[in-house]
Amino acid sequence: MKALVGILAVVMLGAPTPPSQKDPELKLTGSRFVFLPWADPRGPRPSVTVRITAELVGELEDPEEYYCLDEEWEWDDESNPSLHEVDCDPYEPGMELTRRFSGSRAYRYPGTYNITLRLKNGRKTIVYGQTQVSISER
Image: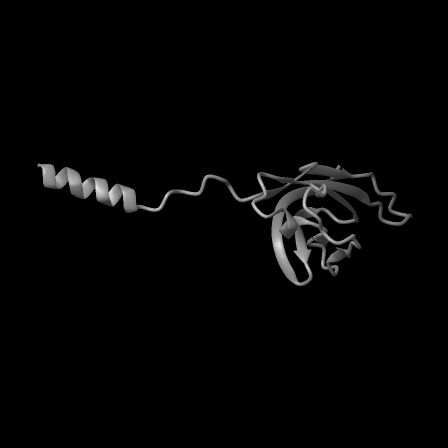
């Protein structure tokens, strides 16, 4: 019995500990359901603007990795991604990081759109998030 207890103690001490911190997440929020305005058949097709807010939540083990990130928005409407590149001073410990981001897009057609935001350092995606919006006609 003592041998079994000793083996269990060695196994438990040698087991890797689970990470104490959860990786940061990018949470996107906005209207989930939107209605297009009434369309006059004689006029141009109306559009509706969808606004999305993203927040980087969680502890950052390496804050420098999350400093001065470019935003790449994909709107799922057959257009090219929107890229917002930033220009920042070099990182110094203690600098404030941007944690809130926002984007908007005008849609003219009903459908369900998967919207993605990638925060990037050059070509490398550091973190990304997704949300979905459904657009209907009244």
